[in-house]
Image (cartoon, rainbow, N blue to C red):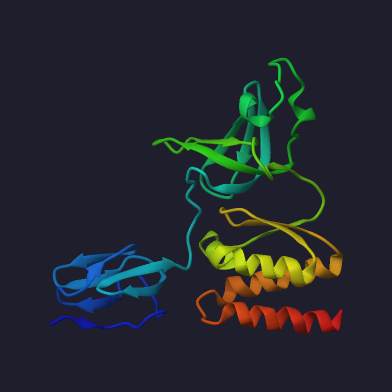
Length: 230
């Protein structure tokens, strides 16, 4: 008979034994070694029936098709713009994917995006060699002007967004800030300076406490207390 050595939402480190015996199945972030299930990453334990998997608590962003990301223009070539995505791989916005308007090859590309600009873009292709193509065609995709940027661990982005965007929507509504969340861990905020500061504090609190239950209610209380002090 199998023996479970961890509980739901425990934090485990690489090499830690999660279960013994063959009754439990290895999920994401775990592997089997003979009759033991072992953690392969620093993560939060999730148990669903016989399946044990880990939600990463740290790690670099890995680009995936259809992700919305926030990136920084770091170079301009004859073919388009090179973008830093806060990960080991740079990305490319080609002339055809930069705008719904036709951009001639001899155009001054810095009139569209210049070095140092930040953009909200969509990943449209990731090759096996980790070449990443971005598009600026679509709702919300744009150059980001004004506001402020903060960075969180990309693994905490789902917690910030929440189920059906419940967490980020609550922060937007209470602080009266525009908030755009990149799957790569870059967050753009724009609003009243005091609202921005409160929103940043709430987001950083989520990053620190993402493993705790009841976090949405805690963040709501945190923002309400902060609003009383403004």
